[in-house]
Image 1 (cartoon, rainbow, N blue to C red):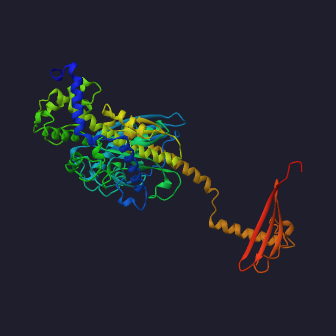
Image 2: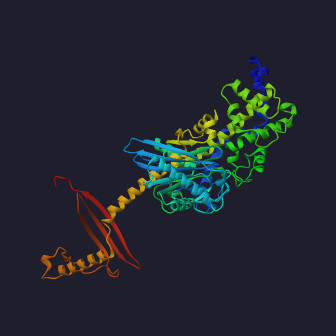
Image 3: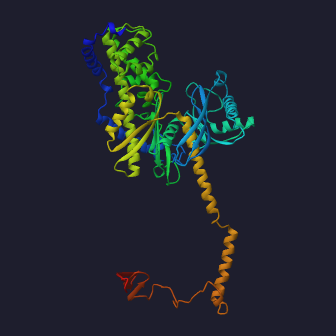
Length: 569
């Protein structure tokens, strides 16, 4: 165990020596505040490219519209279904929202597995299975005869064309079902529900987990306008002004934008900050050249970054007396969960976890090796947190500038295994964000119910907006005139005008057609000279001197003065 290597009196010196050695080797992983600020401005420019219609097609950061037009305002109420699909199982929720300012939500949920046979089958098999599970859930809840609004969290790369229409670009996370890529997933689910025929639901929205996180936290905090995921992958969304979103028609209001910031740098914008180890990670990944920013941050790659550093330092005789093992040389063998344990805030527990992890790889680590491994983990996770803080600061500045606010008060809804599981990541992220954007009052709110509740909240907001729109239309419909009605108005007015012009009927009509004794409009040929005008119609009046000059082009000069009329007069 670690205690036989490290005596309490000697640990400080070991820690200092190993810190110096590792810091020197990984100097490229240390990013100054100045570098992070410059990176933040660089990302802001990438955001602008994604928002602009002309540059979006070639932009790495796509800034995708989500068709979510509002965060919760506390008046939402009703019963909603939510379906959360993003892995080898999925969750169905019944969410009861009580409005009138109570902000109370009651939830019932159940998790359903997706059998291996379905995972390897066709898309219709998957959506038929989901429809079967929906029927089972509704039966258990005793609401199978109700037609409830449903929100669908579908956490795969999609092109969204409406709030309730999302086309799958490609499967990830081990899914390889046929007949889904290139198709609208909402239509496929509706088809399976209709095939059963024993229940119905109104699918109003399909969202990503990032949007779901923002909406979940937005119900609890009205200032939440950013959603952040730092887990297996990383992404962020935020509420953008429609006037800046050139991909969409209309300038009024807001829309949630899915930044897809994991692809930041895919166009070469991060080459000065990427290290040889980052390039090796990318080369060995399933999607070389893609999601380069994500590969520097997310939990899917964090453990592999540490493993590659351990291998390189061992080969340079800096660790393990220059020894490696087949396990250490095996890709993916150093789990990101090891990092969570190794970075425990208690030194002894962290070092014991480092020794345990290294021994599982067939190594016989010294006290110095364990201390160095702990320092490597700290550097890798700190860089990840600071990179994330840099791009988050850019999003916050965008929102602040949109509001023209000197100081922005904002809440960021956060979810993801790295943010929740790493003992120091959230603190490092929060601290660096506040250093980069000191003029923002920022609060981080961890999502407690995942993206399933968020899907229900998106649906609740969509339902509220649809109800409000229907009410407005009902009022406006009473004011709207048909073509036949307008022609009738024209006929009646023409008739009244004729009666007003006639000496015999003038006294009986409401349209008087009074003579003004003005016999002509100006013709621009002979009108010239100086004229006075007096304009009286309220508590003040105007006197004007008007000079008309009939030259090649008729010219008018005016001088005026306004006089007040006191109340006594």
